[in-house]
Length: 617
Image 1: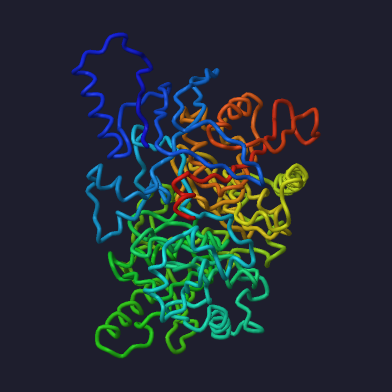
Image 2 (image 1 turned 90 degrees about the vertical axis):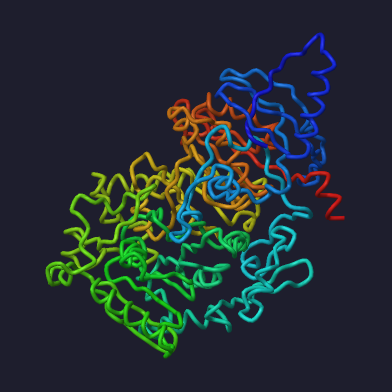
């Protein structure tokens, strides 16, 4: 249901013609499920829903306000709804900025050959949905990690086409009420673990362990499928950003996140991926169906931007081994391209080739004048990524990286708490970094004390820090069985490279827009002053709350750390969102809080529409 305006007035006298028109419009509304209209920031939210809710939360079955309610509570900053309608079931997997229907409705002229239709295209304010995303019929609280790596509830992602389409490749198998993941992939039918060990063996890493004694920590898996490669890397203390678009295999990232494996919806199209330069020790493509030769190698050059000095690209594809004419042609052209990019073959065996990026700028400077691809302009910022177009150029190293012949990073896990060399890019001192790490260690300890009545050791798996700064919140969770998507707002200091240099992962986002993820994918959202920032930008706090509800799993938690007035406003939305208060702390009860700062923790209730309950019975 999109934003609209309710006139809020009652006509004392209605002529017959108007009645007929009203009834006719009512039938149109029931048929199409939503009404578009104009919207102002202070406008009433359209409150007509067609579904009732059945609520279940830890044995609590207290009935809530009906979603058909149109009553409003007056709040200081406008009108706060007592309830939100439930979106139509067809929106149960809505990703607002990756919505194909929006592209068709807005008649966007996109180049399909460049994958522009898989890039972000966010709805304007008047087209944003003002309703709660319903879970699918029969939805259950997700299976806990580590068991979830190997199986999920079929009802939670009721899509089995990949199981049939990839039945010969061991991607996934339907077994009764569950979908099971044997660990296979298009290239590694017999298991990701064996494939990972073979890559380590090709590189002569000790004990066939790909982490190379902690020196290989962050990986980008392009065209990741259901992310079994990334899932099996975790046991080696390697964390992968598993990346895939919302394409014909549209639920692959949804399966990855349901399994508890780090993943992100994205595509190598026309814009830079939302990661800073020199972020990954390894990029991986296994039958990822990407044309690396297009547009002067621009997509391969994007990987080059993202790889650290001496980083690897593992490429498993027919071109690496097949002998037919077309594959040989592609192989020769790729070999020529990567040679001009100064990559060298580190290893080649059977169906896999591994290239290595140079450690310094020496090779770039020794190339013949006019060699393509050229070096990027000196004024190009390789870390500027939000909405920035890719360019077919090589990103040279900074003077520091060139001199030290590498990134100068400590091996994992020392990397997590060692001051990253790129701190100096922000004028931050080692002492500032160490103090920030200590502060967040204490804060996270306090959070877990507040959460302790509600959680067990395996309750939380997928975590998002919505304003990650230097990543110290995520670092403080190292000893817990969780992973953290560290998000850096696009209009603040671009500290995401510090986060990657600590051996963590994350992305950029504008919180006036939706995040690139499926509904119901995170167990915990940490919102440190995000609402205050949104308020300053004159974006909608209500929109952000609805987006957080979309991302949050039923029974998941939100930790809000903000000023008291923000917390007071958010409290007024809790009934409409079906959230409940878990704990509150302020300066009088917690010495870690200063002045007006307040910690407010809420939990999302598990609810199903009455239709979903009937469908699952």
